Length: 124
Image (cartoon, rainbow, N blue to C red; front, side):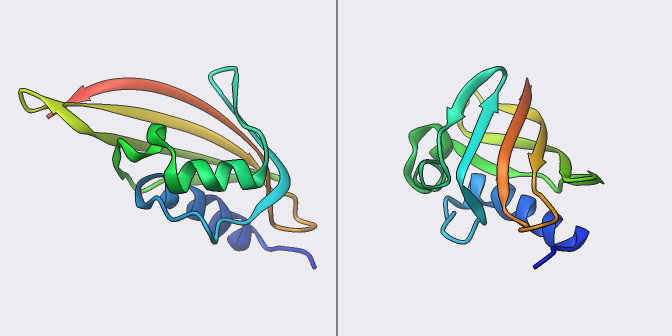
């Protein structure tokens, strides 16, 4: 069944929300989904990504994500958002500007690939 643009944005949003909620059981990953972060493969399958989001230490440090700005082009959903981590030093925390592109084909509405670019920043 073909998915709408709103369905595909909702799929990407569910992933982004799972970054901070650590509840990824309902994120619609395709079984072979992969994730590339700054040129490095960090997701090897839909199940691996789900387990990482639910329990991975690399995600447990994320405190919150900002409201994403989405755009859609063909089968790609592009999201821009910020995230902030939990640890702080003298009131300062690390955050990141995230630029993620999700391959979510109209044909099935599942996330098949994620490409992430990250630019860190310091915030109070």
